[in-house]
Length: 83
Image (tube, one colour):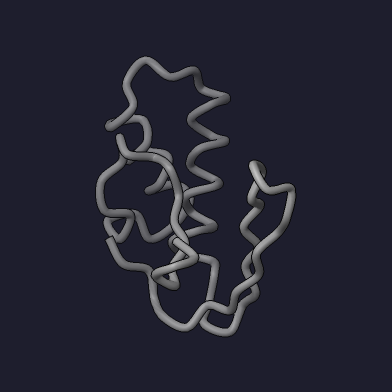
């Protein structure tokens, strides 16, 4: 991600987040695309994905923890969410 100037989330089971414009819609999306998950997990995942797709805005600072290196990478959001 650092080499190509983007950030992302690791929910490969979930399709394009643009179809869920708010938290309630995101819960429905997660419930549909991750059947069998517990209600608490669905709420947690939906909140994370909603923040990523619908709350982060151009100009916001993002932090990427690089756990293998023990460092943090910082960036500024310069574009809208893409799938």
